[in-house]
Length: 218
Image 1 (cartoon, rainbow, N blue to C red):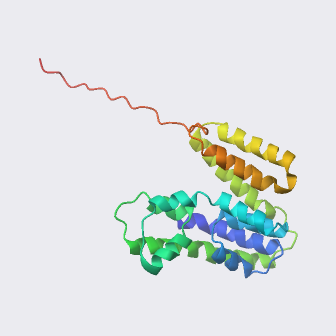
Image 2 (cartoon, rainbow, N blue to C red):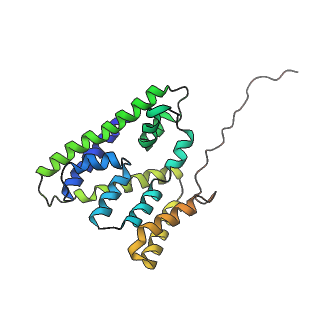
Image 3 (cartoon, rainbow, N blue to C red):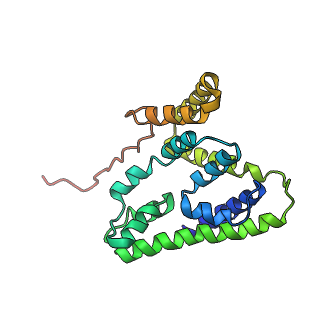
């Protein structure tokens, strides 16, 4: 779980300095926001000069899934509980939500280690990125590559092209109607339609047929 965060943290740190920011903005963004994909999105929004309203709506849409994460994530009390609410990510949820009888100490430490595995590589990546040429080709493709990878895995898990068609249709519609707010509109339409039961057509597991070969009593 932690090892998967290291290369992404490094890439984010490099992207911070390559986008024209000082190296220390990597730990600042990773501490204030600490939302993985939203950090990449925020970096793009800031460099593009996006307004606060657009940024806020985008943050809500991108991180909307965290509302559902909190419903089944192990509870932690006290100040540690406040920290786990702040530091809840896809990785910590996937690792802890399905486990039973996990102690509050283990939950809090897991959150802390995951954040360290993101923030520290981000600092290293930012320092390395500041020593690289300013026009490093291809580093700005890190975020699109990340989202393309996540989208591909989501498509494979669903087994249906509906989500891809919906995403393309929402993007095309938003770009045609309001180009300046295409991202917000496309994400909003996609999220609202995806909430409709049966819309995404997620592949259901095949039934398992058990054959009883035991002899029947007369």
